[in-house]
Length: 124
Image: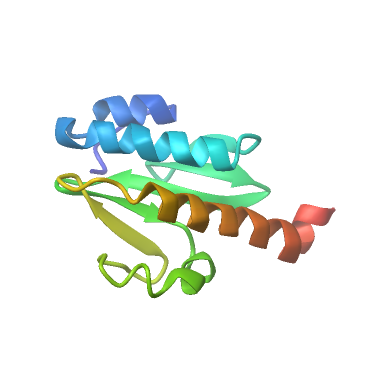
């Protein structure tokens, strides 16, 4: 969905495919609650949350949304992610199925904690 020319995450969601907007707002709400102090930006045409580094990003596609949470944040949840289409650091959530909100919270919280505890730049 690279044709979206949003300047804010809400703009991005409002321009996304109608069938995905509800799920996108749900995902956005989860990520905001997990990382309330993170900076919200649009980079490379995708919504992202940053805290010195990119915490996570998401994107809308024709029939699903992607959450990019990095491979290291997904690794501890490998078993729970088996029922989803995944890439190296991404997870696909189809629009026609409920979001696994608790799993998304756990992955996002793990990413925030991992960055805070293991990234030297966070400490500077």
